[in-house]
Length: 279
Image (tube, rainbow, N blue to C red; front, side):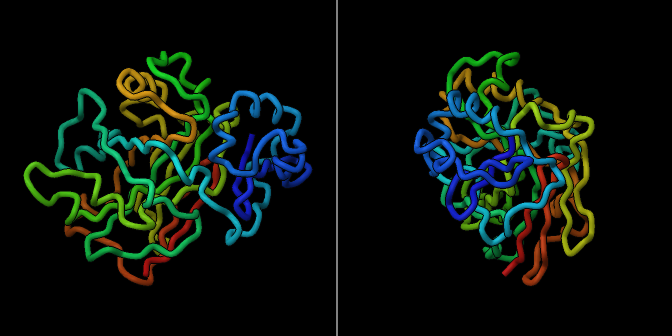
């Protein structure tokens, strides 16, 4: 399944073209994607009757696309989940996931300007898991039954704010407006490439800054869901930012941050790309 939010309406991307969920289901399922996640198990079964468009199929106009989950109850984010990223950031490889939150007001469209909060805003391309069926104490082997799908995200970070104070706290520095763009589509777990084939990439003005396979994750998506749900009750529409690979500006010497006028593009194999212009 490939799902997009087009002109604020949940839309299946099928091999026959875009299908408006509410219209096609004759009102059985809502156009509001937040409400749709609350009925995900039934919707997933219904959607099987609509073969997905190929990953390379053209998308609706970028200006019409919205975030695939705009009002999540929770955003859980995982830090230092790639060995090389932990090293470049000056940290040891964690023995358990490093978890923080981003606030929902930071969510933005997949193609939208990025207001820079200062001179130390950094990029972090991430695979984002969207929860479809909530739960607690979810076993790793059952994790994908609870995932609606995956999308591309950026965990933009104001490093000055992020590391202000001792101890530092991450959430505020990662929650400025526009710091969590999502999209362009949601892809169900069964249609994703293997982790070895799934490459995360981020470019700034065409220069490749990050590029790594999902198989480099320290804690896999099923492992993260099991560990997180042992503590937190996961809710439909919740977002899990699974971590960023090496290549962030904070890890460079000298450090390199975003400047106004630059274009940041994040892409993941099998899902697509999102893009922001820094303003």
